[in-house]
Figure 1 (cartoon, one colour):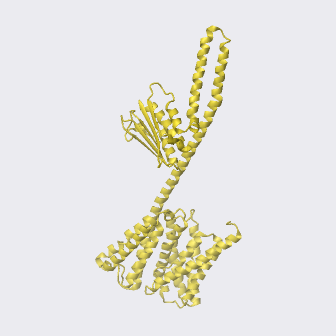
Figure 2: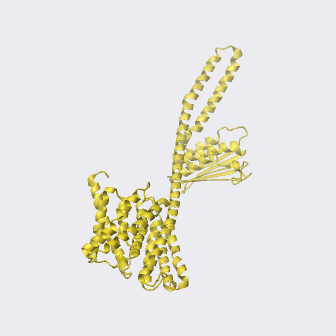
Figure 3: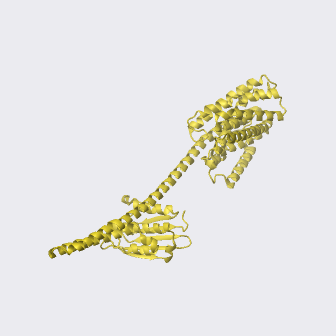
Length: 524
């Protein structure tokens, strides 16, 4: 669909309309703050809006997007009653270098929209926060000399540069976070009502603190650091987006209070007070960006580990399913091929017995009995590999049959306590309980030296449960280095997790081993 010319044209139209509206609203916001600061700039966001749009679109759209941004700014200037020719010249100087900065940032080997490492952050700071505002301010100051704006605030290069720099450093991280689907702020549960309420209370408390104590000279350093807890809280919960919005609101609060003679950023003149607010906001934003990258990396690592864990669980599920399929195939081969051939061999030996001399009858009988014994072992092995009784008779009878399979001499006594309701369980849960019981019996025979094994299976409204106890030698899981989980225990745990259940193992030296498993009736 992206290659469809009509679709591409509609998309470009939407983007141009969005840039036109976004730049216009950004200029109105910047002008609104400007008019409340005795004619000094605080922020200038239109350039940042255009830069964000250029970085999100292909190069062949840049001319149209830049034109839409210029028209939006020019229309806003006309709405304010500014002279058309002078406004057109100054705005052209303000936006002239934005496409060049976007082109430089697009030369990075990785997408800048994923602002989650320090290389991308350094590139953004150098190009968009330092070089672009400084050069654009020079062009604006130079262009203003040929207009009626000569000698106005547009001739104050430091103020223009700081306003542009703050616009880029506060807007672009928010734009990148909203555009990047992997950003932490876009994960569910990030923005909550409690978080918003706490942020509002924090900003209100900061305003009260600055209003009452901000003008005391001895407390100025402390007052400048007072916003740190609010900003850090925003970073931890919402990363770059939260920190940028929070610093923007704090800067507005500081600038407004400075105009009225309150707060820690009061200087001898209103322009110097504005510069103090701008310097604090810029440094705070840069520090917040660095901390946000660290937090974003932490969340990215956590998400990567989560995805890896899900992949491993999926792989474990596939391996278990493949294992069951292979067991079923082997069981069929043993029953339909090997066992039939053993039966044929036994019949052949019976026929051979009638043809040999009586002195060899004993040896032939011995061979025939040996074949019958092997055939019975193969039949039992086939049943263990693929318990057909589980499908035909149900879980309870399958467990009963499993407990009465002949084990080694002097094996443990096995006691089964099972509800008849187990037969209503789904095939996946029934197979899980059967395999876990089978593995537990095998472990008790091989390692536990137990004389009694108790198996209890029950079902209730919450799910199905399986308990297996033995009175064997046991072990200390925390100290016994040889008691690391083997493939059998790992398989039990994975089977339970794949069905959305829980698996626990408890043991102590001389106290035997207790296994517990609980599976919900509606597993995922």
